[in-house]
Length: 108
Image 1 (tube, rainbow, N blue to C red):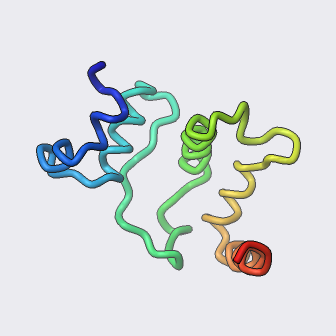
Image 2 (tube, rainbow, N blue to C red):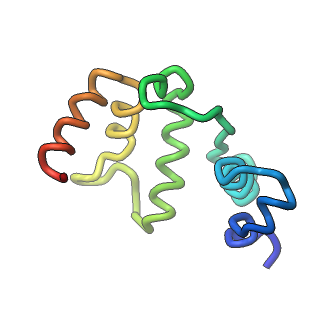
């Protein structure tokens, strides 16, 4: 099947297209969704500057990608609040620090 996910993530694809995994993922996602839930390429990020390169709409589109990948019925339903969580984590450095402390305490 042309344009299949695996076509975008083979070594020969990267070598042929001279692309990164990020660029391939963005291209594949946007091709599959034809403008709906579009995501943009962004420069490589460090943890301290995440909030400078993203806006909430972009994060929401990434949540759609994540829910599709995890086969979740929604990004915000019941106790699952991925939209709120990822917006807080990426856009607010203070909340990111607090969430990291919780994760470090409970999941390391």
